[in-house]
Image (cartoon, rainbow, N blue to C red; front, side, top):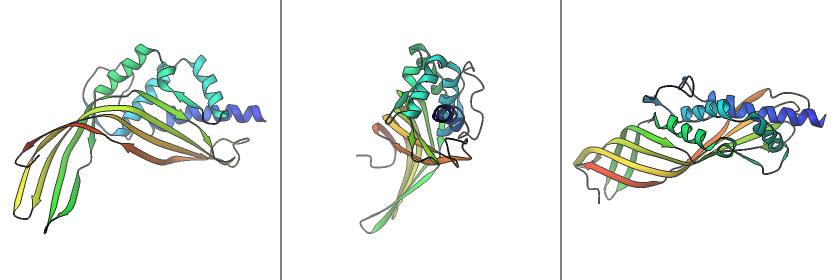
Length: 228
């Protein structure tokens, strides 16, 4: 029935937020929202997992469940995490995020400049003092067999530090850098499939895509490198 299908879609959204994001984390980051602050080495997936667990523990189910049901049956509907939490709770969430340190993978940039290749190695990339403005969840019914749940983290701010080393012909050097980046955004799209969502629960799920937009607003470079 249509009522059954609506309830199933609403429950699917709950699972996408609470379970889908939490399972993206490869390790248990925070056992509970009252965990004592301490620096944690983790990845961006742990940020998603922390947000999901906190939302599940604090959200007012009396207001959230109707919102999920409405979202599951509306075109272009968006559920705002900030609006579903008390203002003090959202501030507490950002305090939890501040103790997370994201460890990004090392990377190498290679670029031809004049007659030589410039090789720039970036290592020990770590970001901390994380805060978010909002998390927004939408719902797209592609067909009776496929549903996607885009999850957008907006207003993502953080400080980052890294070590760098370069070589260009006979020249080389190394140093460190600090960057402040704000108003970033990250979008993760979860995909669920079923033989028929009107009759059956999803039989397969996964991450369809994950995209980010990073804006560096301030940078400070140290070392024997021409920074101008």
